[in-house]
Length: 133
Image 1 (cartoon, rainbow, N blue to C red):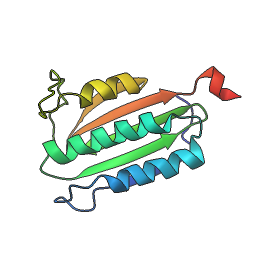
Image 2: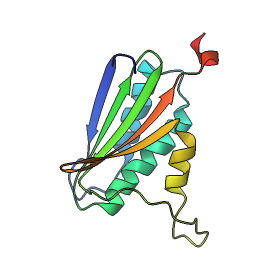
Image 3: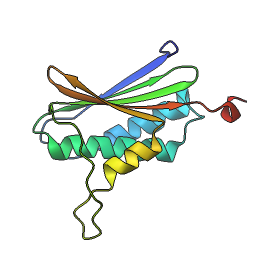
């Protein structure tokens, strides 16, 4: 991976916060300035889903890291739960099951890394040669 050029970190406002707006706003601004080649809608959907999962499935905090290199974008969500995301069959009755599938399809690569405090979910996009112009 190329050298990290730009990093932004957004943290949960406080453990009881159920809002993901700050993460989406920080991501949109970051992409505008450092990764204009990235698909904004796809990245925002992934960030929204990963932060929503952290809010829904953990009892504690979450932290968003955005890192841009010359031809890479890395989105990482750290949270306090050691449990990895689980793919579930999608439910059209409102019980979810779409998010993890969506994350895996929209990001170029997705990894779940156990940490002493919980886990990190990392989504990586590579700049396409067509976008290099």
